[in-house]
Every structure is written in C-alpha cells, then in structure tokens.
Image (cartoon, rainbow, N blue to C red; front, side, top):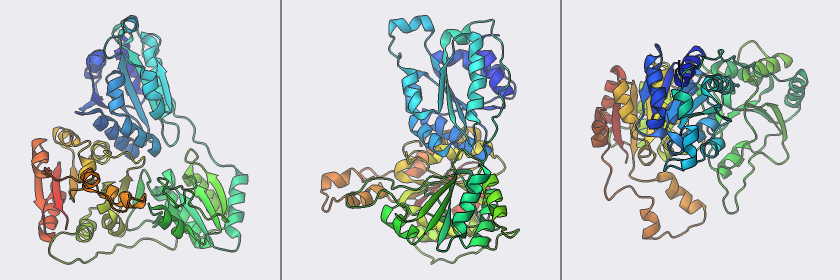
Length: 515
C-alpha cells in the first residue's frame, strides 16, 4: 500500500471513521485512500472553517476525534478560527494537511508556505512525516495526542510524495492515554476550604459540566451550601429537567464581578479563575474577589467527575443532590416576534435530548434562560469567541448524534462567516434546525462601542456594524444552499415553523425577524 492508504487504514483502526474534508491537488492520494477504506465516512465542506468547526462539534459530542483533510498551508489557514475555538473547547481533532512533495519545496511554488508555522498556534501537537511508512506512524501518534483528556488538536503534515509512494505499512493502533486524577492531598485541601465559615462556591468548566460530574457537584452543594457557578463559555454543558442546575458567569466584566462578590472560598474544577473577555477603560480584568481563597482542585486536563465524587465523599455529602432542575413551561405574549417570546417558544418545544449550538449573540439570552427548565439537552457555546462556529458545530454534532435533534441558535452577522455549512447539512441530510436571529446588525459590537468609551459614534462608524443596505435574505440564502426555510415575524409563525421542523427530519431554517 502507499503512504496515504497506510495512514487512512491506521486512522480508521484507531477509531476515526469520519473525515471532514476540503482537499486540493496535494491531497488526491489521501482522497483515493479514504474512498478505498470501508467504513470511513467522507463529508465535504465548501470552506475550511466549516470543516474544522464541524470536527469541533463532532468531537464535543463523541469525545473522540474526527479527521479533517485540508489543502496545504493556505487551506489550513482558512480553518484556523474554528480550530482556535476547538482548542479552547479542548475538543479532540486530528488534522491531516497535505504539503508539496519534499523535492518540490525547493522551487517555492505559489502555494508553498510554512505549514508548521501556520499549524502550531492552533494545535497542541504538530508533526511532519519523514517517510511513507512514517506517515501512518504520525497518524497513530496524532490520534493518541488528540485523546489526551479531555481532548487536543493534533496536526499531521503529509508531503505529497509520502502519500503516493508504495511500500508503506499501517502503524500500530493508537492507545488512549490514561486520564490524570487529583491527589488525595488536593482533595483534602479543597474540602477544608469548603468547611470554613463564609460563602463558598464551586467554579466548574470543561467535563465538570457533564451530567455525572454535575450530580457530584450537587452532592457537595447539599453538604456545604456552596453555589455552583460555571465558566461563561463552556464547550458542552448538560442542562435541563432532571439535572443539577448551575449559574453561568455573566459575560460582561462588571456583571461577573457582581455575581462573584461576597464569595470567600472558590474551588475550581475544570476551569481556571475567570478573567474579563476584553480589557476596558476603568473596568476590572480579574473577576474573582480579591480577598477570596482560590483553590485550584482540578485543571481541565484532570478527571473532573472523579475529583468531584471524591470531594463529595470527603465531605460526607448526601448520596443525592437536593437541587434538581424541574421541567417548567413558560407563557409569552402573542404578537410580533421578540427575543423573549422566541426563547420561551423554543424552550417549550425543545425535544428531549436535543443538542443546542448557541451562537445567538445578543439575542440569545432568553433562549439560554428558559431552556434551562426545558427538556434535557446539551448546550454547545462559542468557546473561543471566534465567530462563525455555530453552524459548522451544529453540522458536526448532527453527524455525531444522528438520532438527536440539533437546534442551531445563530446570529445573522456571524452566520454569514460560515453559511456554507447549510450546504453540507443539505448534502448529508443532517437533522439540524437553524434559527437565524434577524436583527440586521452586529449587535454585540453596537454594545461594545459604548463600553470602550465611544460616546457619539458617527455614521461611518455605525455603518461598520450595520447589516442593511442591502438587507440579508436568509430564506433565499438557505434555499440556495438546499435547506428549506421559512420567515417568521410573529409568535404564531415562529411556533408553527419550529414545531414543523422539530416534527420533521433533516435540515430546516427559520429566519426569526426580531422586533
């Protein structure tokens, strides 16, 4: 077999059976190898940001990597923003990036670039193969690196001649690394902090927001009175009726400071002490109370559920939490569609075990708030802050969990970054219902303009935040990508369109025109 065949066989035998791809000439041997590998699913994205964002969504939902196939340094560069989000989410991803044949690099052809330099900032591990057989070895190593708890970004650079040369062999299957655990001493330190007088909290992130870990956190809260607070932008948060509820730290710095005010002991599991998203004039960057005792029990790279269970046992916590979220429908006022009504309608109709991908921006608050008391669901958020993640992550989540309904809450401005994901949803018949928050604006930037001290912005500044002239027509855009779409301007239109989408199967889009 050639090097490409050896690599793809190794990846498949190591557990990778999905490849999100946007290949070019240097990857044609790899394309042929994927074609020959029975059981390997190949999914085309029309832009590399869709490819990497879909791999992120897939990794968040399966806790195992998909592969991406990208074309040289420029193709990889097109996908870097969503690799940034995936790295911040600690998602497992294996990138396969083609490169020129080794002897061709000396000619400095137009697509020649420093692929290692492009890959390194958004990868946890990067390696270029040294031979056709080493290409498969590098692939096995990449899978092992990607599986480091809770996940990493591993990138293999595959020179063209290593892919096409015969005589290669598949490598040994990757072995999943052991998951680190906290020490007994760290457990005792955290337990002593929580036993002290005063207000205390557990601050949760990463895998600490899965249902099993939250159950243990609820036990601790029952024993100590600790508040349960989570990071502002978690990668995957299991919420809804029957689960332990958690307070989400507000986005804006002054609100976050107020939220944490008065806490005297904070124990961190799966997260670091929070900081402001941006620096602002005369606003804090460090958000924890200055005089609070901060105890880092478990980083995101340490088994969160194990740490929480052992901490609960050390505190002689009750066997079950006392605070379990109950299902609660909400009422709304009929008429023109508002963000409040849209959020309540979505929460009321949310199907059991749905997956919600939230890139709703300034319109998302009511959806987040009311879905918390809806059916059980997983909530995926824009972890790294690089917009254009929501639609691709929805596609990847739908590939990962074909038996679950995916709801994409998508702001109109950020949706334009990767709207090609709609085409992939149509091509693969993915069960994603996209709700476009149509406010014709980069809403968050209108807020931020004032927060950084711009008091009277002129027409030129405001034009850079405005999405009219011409106004986007999301029904036309969606249908042009092959996804059926409806426009909703009233609560009745929105409710009917959402109910129809939830009852059906396959991709749908609702353009929610918000008043």
